[in-house]
Structure formats: structure tokens, C-alpha cells
Length: 115
Length: 118
View 1 (cartoon, rainbow over the protein chains, first blue to last red):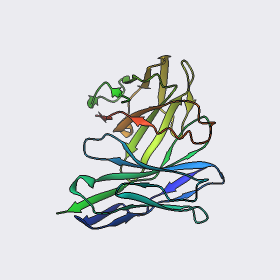
View 2: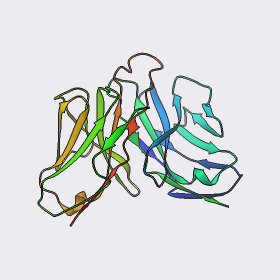
View 3: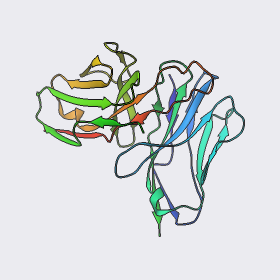
């Protein structure tokens, strides 16, 4: 069975600074996707960034980037120039590339942004 | 934009009641999912469906059942609610067809139903 671990239940960052959220996963599959979702207090789950395991290049979306280390099974999220609106729960998720499209989620990291 | 709508934001029920949580999506997605979200445990998959009248158990199906009579609607049923089913419930949907390389459709989530069983 696949597992996803987020070892940091809570993190805080000063506004405008950079923070990194960690995620590790365990799988025997070679073809899969990794995602970071954001869940603000409004509760809507929002996709932040995705990474295909077959791609060596780290995904980037504006201020959000990942450090994907396939051999180490690590998938961290870096948020640059943190903004107050970044405060939320962040979930790392994994999905095997098959037709089921099921996601396995980590336990989440609560990010607080200090003004 | 994809819209996934859950019928209630908050729901309070009593132990032993039969509880229905409804989810509707408007993008003709084949796959629909029910998760429960608990602190420290993230989201755990209860059931999913990849077609009308089709259902598959997820990681924690005990105490739950589902119904998918129409493509756009996926219902989660608590046959006899218990206090350990107090949780946040999230519905999601996505398109089928991830066999093609690069088909990394994200799941689209509803706003969640916070269910309390007294």
C-alpha cells in the first residue's frame, strides 16, 4: 500500500520570506503523479502544483515550486515571498498512473503566515 | 470551471439515524469520490465510483455505503450513524482516462460537509 507522510503538523513563516513543507511517500510503482493541495479556511481544496514522476525537472507555478527527489521519495513544496493568503492547510498527495485516479493524502501541514 | 456541490455545509444528526450526504458535479466527470478528513490523518478515501451504478471500496468503507444512480450525483450513506463518524466529509470528481501520458487531471473538490453525530 502507498503511504504519504508529512512530518510537520504546523509551520510558520514571516510574510515575504520563504518556507519549505516536506513530504515523503512510499511506493513500489515507477509511474505516478504527486500533488500539493491547499485548503484555506473556506475548506475548498485547491490544487497548487503537480509533478509527473517521469519528469526530472521540478515543477514551478509562480511562487510555488517543488523539490522532487525520486530516489529518496521526497516531494517538498517551497513557497517564496510568502503572503498572508498562503495561510492554509497543505496536503501532499500521490496517485498511481492508472485509470482509477485515486489519491492518497498525507496528514497535512498547517501553515501560518505572520505579518 | 468545474463545480462540485455538496448539499450541506453543516449537519447534526443523532446516533442510529440514517444519514445521506449528497454530492453533485456539473462537468460530466466519470469518477467521483468520498473522503473523510480528520486532524492529523489527512483525507482518507471511503468509496469511489467510476461509472453509474459502479462503486469500489476505498481505505475505510466500514459503516458507509454509496449510491450512484446518475452520473452527476454520488451519495454517501451512513446506515446507522455513530459518534466516531463525526468528521468533515469531502466529495471530489475527475475525468476518466488517465491511460494517456500527461493526463494528470486533478480532482475537483466540493466545499465539504461538517457532520456531527450526537
